[in-house]
Length: 112
Length: 112
Image (spheres, rainbow over the protein chains, first blue to last red):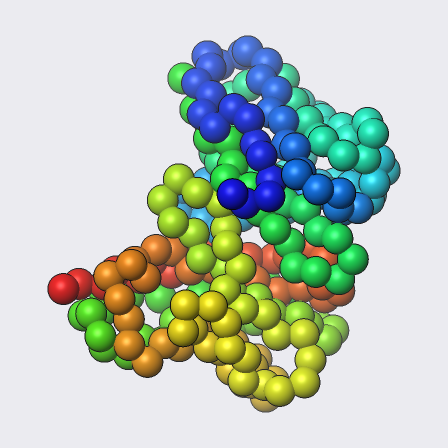
């Protein structure tokens, strides 16, 4: 149990389709992060929330990507018009106070 | 801006032998440093962290790391590895303890 639940674990979609991932922290954490990890690389920062507010977005986050955290608890990441280059593991992490980031098991996206 | 270089993409080692995984960082500000481990199809688990104080940091599973400011390094060590240590290890840096910048990872392969 990582303390962060991500669903689905795996998603296979066709190019051009929209997909949405969900991240549910088990307990309250004021900060929530999304990272993307491609094969052979370390995780790359996408965006983060302080409670409901999205405070920073990476240049990696194109217009096709949108993230929300409407009530300051769970978060969703949507990718519109998926491309093969979007295939990756999408990781959610949470942080409370000064504690280190705590990661979920990720959602693996495959775009065919 | 911060960056991390993990000098070895793969490190093969025999069981019960010592191992060192190398990490160098670049930052214009004071840093916090972390090592995470990732098992196949899972998220990242924190091994250890350096925030301040003693430069030798002990973590879980018998791992330790030493912060060397003059050499901008944070190498991870274990005196005797087990088969179960086979995984990918990521070094990460943060300027404020929040958003992490990761290295590309080092795959540790422990052989019997």
